[in-house]
Length: 265
Image (tube, rainbow, N blue to C red):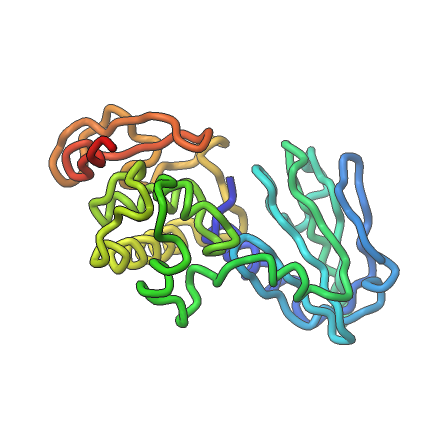
């Protein structure tokens, strides 16, 4: 599933191909999830692409925005005429060049919205995980407390935007915290390690995945992660086998030695 790094790569590519140009087409293709006043977007200048958490925000020069969420398998691909699973076509003119980018999405969970009030969408989300104003104390205040497992709490986009299953598990490993630990039992010093770990994971993923097109693990891409998807492999720190279970309906990976299980209630 696309997480913050993959969405940031998509933002950079969209900005490179379409930023500053005039939208000449925003067309639904079979299986599209495209809603809003499309006529408002066509003819408008796509001033810039922003990202907040996992949400792509194409700001229009006259106000409003084109929003996109990649769902589980979405990606924006340039010149994808021969690709299956195209859902939405965006064409933008800059000078004499018209760039055509398509939302390619086999699972059909990605979407595009045209809105005159993008901030109403952004207000539903917590601070972006890379926001410099987000520090360890703020993270603890937003995500700490109670007996909800830490992983579940960090996946709540209303608390912190952009953290996905992979990022949370990698951050927990880097911080030495078990993902099942109740959020209220996380030691104060661990929040700093969790935030640093999440950002280190994001920086690493951006470095190894940066390119024209994202390749997800489900598509046979290389696994650049420390613990995610590595059940049974030796821990990169202590060589104990990486464990796997399921939490919040998603696969969960951790080192049982480096990340001790929380004490029973």
